[in-house]
Image (tube, rainbow, N blue to C red; front, side, top):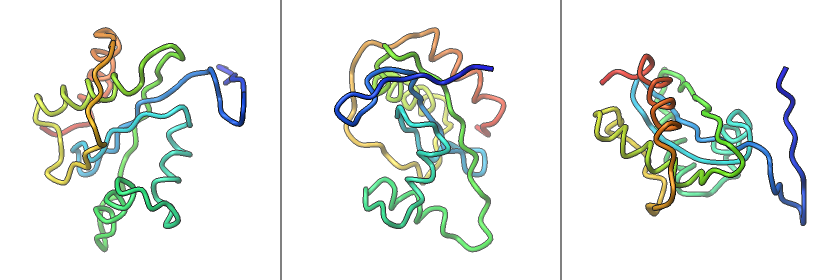
Length: 134
């Protein structure tokens, strides 16, 4: 068992693990996000019709096709001190280089340069490789 522990200050978590999460649709990367919220909860937030964020709207639109394949979401844990945004953008770039992005890929917004861990990126790509159709 790996208990989840974090501290709340001023209504927001200040520590604890984070996530980079990948939405796969038909074996291709549809979206990559970064959050401190568990990926299952984050997915529910993206799919809520109450969420007007343009990325969430775009994800819902791409999933709206009748009889469409349901997405698979892969949560990749990130240490509390890691720069989740930098890791997310490094993973997107690596997926783009490998030809893994869907033609309908939902861009996450502005690019973010920051410190990233090559070890984390290699582990993330190894976890995704068997699930992605290039």
